Image 1: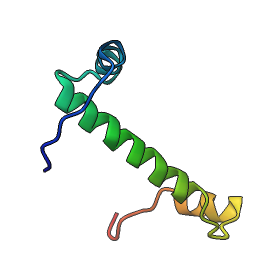
Image 2: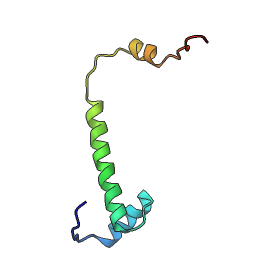
Image 3: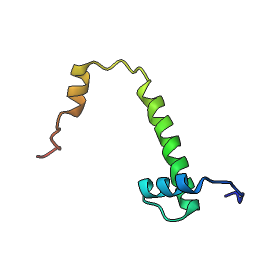
Length: 69
């Protein structure tokens, strides 16, 4: 963790806190940063080309029986 001082727009902080359901500036900023990082990671994953066809995906999503069932 790093302790730092920030100048924050109070109205923007309050709106972000309401949207994120957080309480206080630290949790609001932390949650917002986590959301940005997660969104970027998901965006990066979505751009991967792994060569699966719709049939491949359907097979992977199909239910499987357990041994002995």
